[in-house]
Amino acid sequence: MTRPLRLGTRRSALATTQSGWVADALRERGADVELVEITTHGDVDRAPLAVIGGTGVFVSALREALLAGEVDLAVHSLKDLPTAAADGLALVAVPQREDPRDVLVAAGGRGLAQLPAGARVGTGSPRRRALLLDARPDLDVVAVRGNVDTRLRMVSSGELDAVVLAAAGLARLGRLAEATELLGAGAFVPAPGQGALAVECRADDAEVLAAAGALDSPADRLAVLAERQLLSSLEAGCSAPVGAHARFEAGALHLSVAVQGPDGLVRRVVTGAAAGADAARALGARTAADLLAGPLAGAAGALDPLAVPAAIPRPPAAAGGDAREHTPDRATAGPRPDPESGS
Image (cartoon, rainbow, N blue to C red; front, side):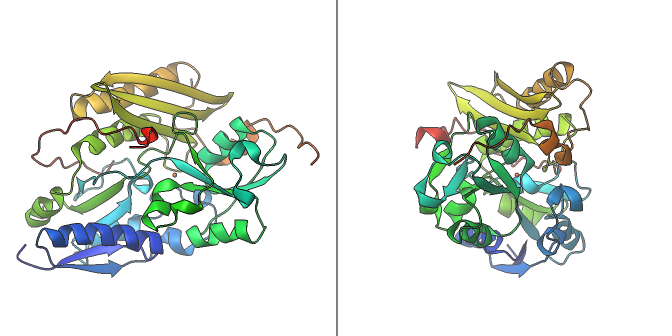
């Protein structure tokens, strides 16, 4: 690089940790990197994400800073990134993905099955709410916002019996040991892109495209392409009750899906060729088309996060989370280990 790189990041501990990891990876390749903290709308408005806009509330300020030339690249949690292309910007790298699973952090070291009837479980995600109530209809699922520390204190203080968080966030903060259960991605399907980072830059900045493109993990990019194409084809945002998790196995790409529809939770596991970006997108698009022709007929564009609580039957309690794609000139990597295998 012929100039220092200004890397835009949100101010939270998790965001700066994630951005710091990207900055360190670039420094190892000889770049001079400075973190520039930027406050986003999602950081200052504590209303539920579905109310304040859902998709994009954590990324718009970073993108504006990029386009204004105030920073040279930005790091996002990929699950927060809108699927629509952003004019003038490129998704230059999807670095190696962390564990995409969700975790439960519960009082007394309990797992999901061991929570008492009527236990209060916190989450700000309509997807997690739908999956929790599908597994345990007796739970009292409480809408919460706040950073990792805030949510964990809700459990340690006794305000909540448990919270559900992303394994990746806890791992990056060095706090994964506080999880009391790793929720399997087959049943508790993660959000599209969960566990992955997205590095964006200006589409005409050749130096940054070359430098940051070296961080790209082609196999992880293909997996999240399939997940995000499903989300896009369903015309759903990152706050919608949609889970999608793609993984490589035996030379194929397997896509697990869970969507809260008008008549309850819909699940699918589909398989497609792992032959590149077009095949990954086709798998996501085909899966969405099949859902919209069947159990989600008429639901395109109508997967309203605010409707999720009413869509799930709740028996009385018993007594007792695409920018324009830039693909670096690299060969597609082979399969990555399945995160559920413990590898």
